[in-house]
Image (cartoon, rainbow, N blue to C red; front, top):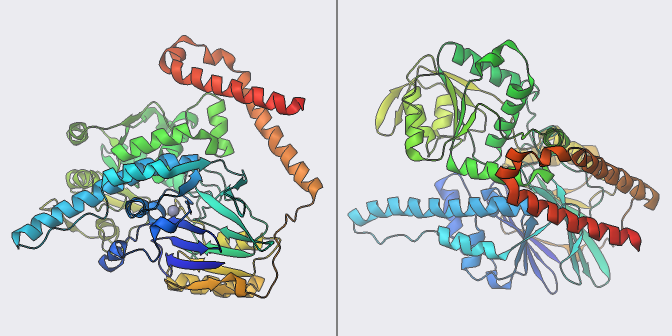
Length: 543
Ligand SMILES: [Zn+2]
């Protein structure tokens, strides 16, 4: 068996790993390279394998740097299955189509320039149509469900706590009566991230492929982030100003909605009388929020409890969604204090740019950055304190307050990564460090060696690891005692049962007329589904 690293090797984008067994070819992720022109040009290179020969693509999560070359893969002949969690499939369906639109419009713009200098027009990497076609190959699986892909390959998704649907992949490959277990971390989240669960602990692996984004960094204290956010909103509103928050449409925006919901619905502090209107101005963020609501089973316990108590944690009284372009433009004509959350997160494109143009030059306003700002982006220039910027063809003075709140990161830091590795009971024989800049992987490699004495490899693009050449015989049977396993399952079952009971005790709510009128079909279908499941469970118990 061979493991070949074809992307996110010494960089953080373009995730793509090829596993070749005697009979099958499996890809882990197929992401877009993002960042510099040089890096992005790699997306146009030929794949270093024949897409027609790939049997399975296992997708860890929907982020474009992990999924963005899927439409290209399908366009070039892939006909296998793309396997991921349901929420990942739902999110990928909007993100890939959006990515297709972006590819088309980038090329259109470039071609206008090229036609003026009589150059041949470029062809987009793929179109939104190609993205639609690729969705046919997606198949979804549940978390924690071990599935056999065929006689020699099994797979299980565990929660990576990074974005909705994100997963750690456990892969068992049997060849010549020998089973090797490969664990691919995907992108690992942080503990206590809003909405999503904490990253799950994995206890055994022969080989571990580990992300290393923050291998050389520790995050600031995350606890104060919401307090800081609310303080800025309230201070700005008191002086009659508007708050602009550039935010990634998928993930970050929903986290903000969730935190604001908690504040406006449950905190009875003086400021709440204001209930500043919050506008989500990004069609993509609105579609993504819908998908979050439909995948509430992936939420953490706190969010699920809110739902079971009758609150929709992604909606509150003073929250408004803005779809239309004109409606978005009108936001800048109304003089009252408000918050506008809009994309793109690094201010490189999208509606955020016209909101900045209308609000940057007034001292009463505030801009809050809640995400990573890459070198060279408008977001980074503002964050660094520019007093003037060029926006949509005009020079705009920067008089608004510029704030930056750390602590909303999607990735675990150095300590989180080391603790996660330390929790393995059966230590991996080797760890491959991917998805990190060189400085970051080097630091992490050194610490892993020091603390756990596990050898690491930081592969270059194209590096092939020949697992069969390893003399060590591997065995990846389950290592937990059956008794302990039974106890764990009992605990999990009890949790599900408690939630079910709590729901049943609220039947009155289901039959409220308003609710019924609004959600009749959906409720009916879900309840029928539940009835079928309950019958299946009764059958099992009757055996
Ligand atoms: Zn990610």
